[in-house]
Length: 304
Image 1 (spheres, rainbow, N blue to C red):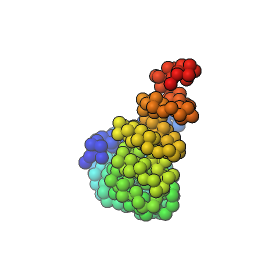
Image 2: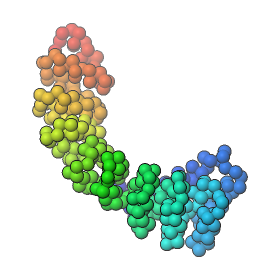
Image 3: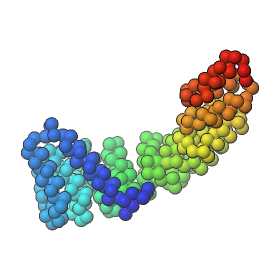
Image 4: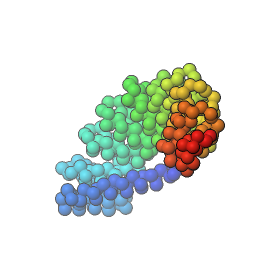
């Protein structure tokens, strides 16, 4: 199984596991010697067959153990491909509280078990904000854009929609994000998501659309996050093609974000309007252009 960007899911799981284990070792100052021993014993179960590991892990989860020990046990479950392991994780996700619940949800994401991931929808629907964030993170880990898209479509408030859209952006899920374009959801959140996902075509379309000025301005500026030659050319086109200073300023801000000082310099050279030159020179100052001092000398000496 592969992640959206060609990274094998098991590698992502290993990266997450390294982080989880590192967190456990970060607790060394607070953990008792007994807990440290238990965590080491649990790590040893990584090489044990499921029929040997599962009873031990179940006993740890049902016993009077610290959260850190139980978190280590849940990671072991995420690495075991069995219905019993997923049932134990789901039980922790449903019936635990706080960080333990969130950790169980994360481990379901690492496991990538389809049935367990589907069950997270029910946990999401009845959960608080932290639980919902944990479910979205689990879908991000497992690369489940379709499920996140469904959450975005069914969102009942702006914050819920934004969280789902941000998750899709982190996934690079441009197809699902494009399907949300005309959904009536928060346009600003979508613009940011298209930028993060690198969707130049959708942002360019929104930047050229004059039907909603606020969204257009946001989209123009966001092109700077894309920062490639096509985006910079579009920003130059937007600046030159309007007399609306709000649009011009958004295009300049986009070029500043992308570091396209050559474009701003070209605009400075081609205008004879002194007020416009002043504005452009200010942007070139912010950008630290290599040509800045030459322009300063020219301005002070009344040269073009």
